[in-house]
Length: 465
Image 1 (cartoon, rainbow, N blue to C red):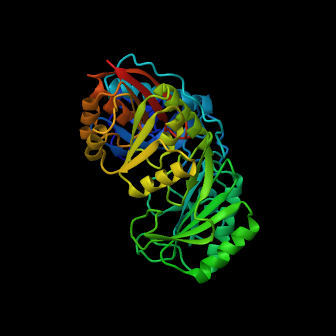
Image 2: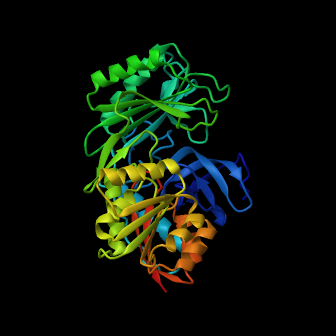
Image 3: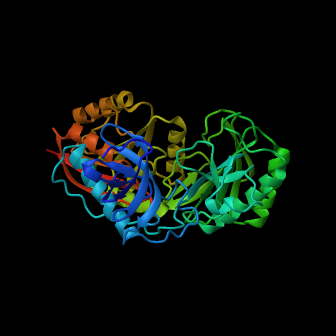
């Protein structure tokens, strides 16, 4: 049977691939199907055909999988945010663990590594402390909304339709953020509609309203509203800030990020505080962190505590060790480890993150953390010359993993123990393979920070071979 683009075929889903797509193998040929789960029998249309695989979308559910459940969210069948809501959480964890195992074996060629059961998220709804909603003058309508002639398509505030850059699902109730966030979002939506100014158009690059970013503190119950606009307009934004602060006493900060850049990124060229404070505070364990509008901070606070506790466990600190943290960000891991280490040295290329890290250390009265800004491969040699840095190294890179020059430098320095924190099993496996001549992987512990998605954090413990 030929599986050409446009062909319609009935298939049975037998697995879930990393990336979240269902896998069918009619006649042994892999077809990846979006929003399909093992056990589903579906009629699909081939949307992409390559030499060794095809991609398809579901036209009809012939017979649903026995594990399939009704997704709690109204938007689950359309939104790109939580594509696994129809899969029970226990099943999600099973596949996430298997994806880590498969990556280690097939990408890293690391056989027999102990991969432990996934540490689940304490909460699977209402857990996100940061949500970024896009404004668009081209609202996308669900099939149910298409039947309602009163719904207009000229404005949407919500999340992207998968595979599009300018189509926005107008979302009134997002289940993965605390409910107060939905109330704040809906107030802002109504204000925008009545403002007389258009949402930003990514094709013409005209329009005022660009993004609404909401951040919250699970420890203190406070909120930040970040309004990202194309230009300043105090006359319009000040009344909105006043309304929000009056209606929602939980809001401690309203800021305005302003950017005329064409890129669809919710970061301003500069920022103004409209009302309240510059930042909000969050607690991780015994430490308090200040979070500004554009700071990086783990989006699942309780999950972050589980993750950092694991880093601390694997580091096996006695108070005598020097710890180097590569990709130290805003200093959360160094500060977390500070009470058990002799000295923690963080390296981070983003200058604003280093400033946040230093401020957070000072705020917590920590004196044994220092932070250096620069490219790791350039900064690391000079740091090593000043310290005995062969004890513990923590590596927490972005999704792309470590640069090969950084890997070479780590191997050259030869720390006794490496704790590798990864948000991408593929690049984790690649980097571990590059170090296997000198290090053995003791174990890998996945930690779920992102329920209802295929994403999974993992912490790997490496020791000298």
